[in-house]
Image (tube, rainbow, N blue to C red):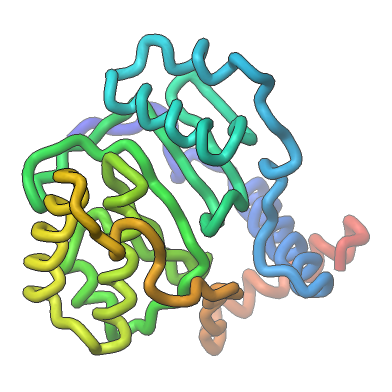
Length: 237
C-alpha cells in the first residue's frame, strides 16, 4: 500500500485543534444566521466564449453536454480545466459537467459526465433501496441533496423521478430499473417519455440533515474544552 509522504499523523496537535475550533465557529455563525450551507460560487459567472475554450479538448460527449447546458441555462458560474458548474438554474440546485467520464453499465454501457442536483431529503431507511436501484443516483444526507449522474438531462430527470417513487413506496427497485430502461430507450427513439421530460413531483426546498451530536466521552469533553478556550482567545466564542 502506498504511504502518504505527509499525512494526518504529521499534523501538529495545535494545528489540529485550530482547524476544529474554526470549523466549530463557522458552523455557529451559519446557524446564528439561520443558514445550513454557503453557496458563494453562485456570485460569479464565466464570460461568453469561455466554455468553448475550456471544453475544446474534452471527450465529444462531454463537450456536447456542456454546450447543451449553456444553451438551456446560460453561462456557468464557475469553470476549471475539467469542470463547469451552474448554481440554481431551472429546477436544479447545482449542475456539473466534467471531462472526467466514468463508465456506467446501467441500463447499457455509457459514460457519465453530467451531474444534476436537487434539494431532496431521503429517509435513512430508503438509502439501501436507492443504492440497489442505481449507483449513479447520489444521496448526500447532510446537504439534503439528491443527484443523478448520467450523459443527459433527460436521463437524470428520469433517475430522480424513479428515485422519488421508490422513496414514496409507489414503485419497487426491480420495476424502477425495468421502467428506466424502457422509458429512456423510448425517449432516445423520439417517442413520448414524460418521465424524461419533467419532474413528476414537486421538487422540495430542503434544509438538509445536520444530524445530532453524541454525548461526549472523556476525550471529546477534553477536546470541547480546548475548542472553547481557543475561541475565547481569538474572540470567536
